[in-house]
Length: 326
Image 1 (tube, helix red, strand yellow):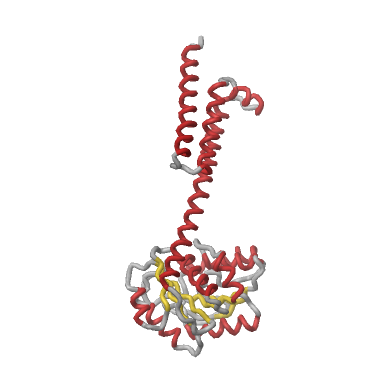
Image 2: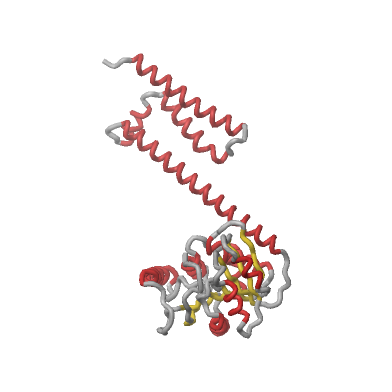
């Protein structure tokens, strides 16, 4: 025999709990403790619970309609679905907040830099994180080539004296990012500066000393020759002696080569190279749309899928002068 009084108690407790959730969420919204857009899923859940608490046979009818033999399993599925939607919603919110946080940090760095005199149409963007051992020599190497340029070091929240070492040279502008954004956020800061100051060309040049400033004319020449929007300094376009990355890093590079060749229908031999030249059109685009997590290979896809012309030229590199690779 089924104890009807126990069912009534369960129904009463279910109704009480459902209404409690509804009015609790309502109070949070009213007191502005939670935004309306974030409360919608919780209101939907509470209304769902209220309905099924009032109509105790609703789940049985719905299960029969859907051909589910065991009605409680349908309830479990619904709860799982709600949890899944809630997690997606939270992920979207976190992603949006992360993007806003990145933009605030970038703007703080650019505002602190102020308006510096522009001396050339070529900007060298040097992202640097804990590169105190190498940054001065990188700047010296850049100034040693016969090209008119401005150098912008983007200090990505370094914990060492990277910023002080760069400033001490007196040969570079230094953007101070108050928090570490990673290579993508640092390079995009450089693109934003280049776009706002109307630079015609930008070179991405690592702050660890691996790239050779003497190779920059190769990138600029190939850009002019091919009419390319981006030119990548490739370590693998031609065989040459010199520094080579580790086996597993090269394996990953080959993986990106195959994947990106499928996605943009163009073979790029060095998708992870951080030695690149960009024209004005690419600068303006990447100032607004630049990937953060895996910027080098993703930027190849981003530009390729948006009909930018990409070229490569063979370049050499050397071992980093200090610090460690990320």
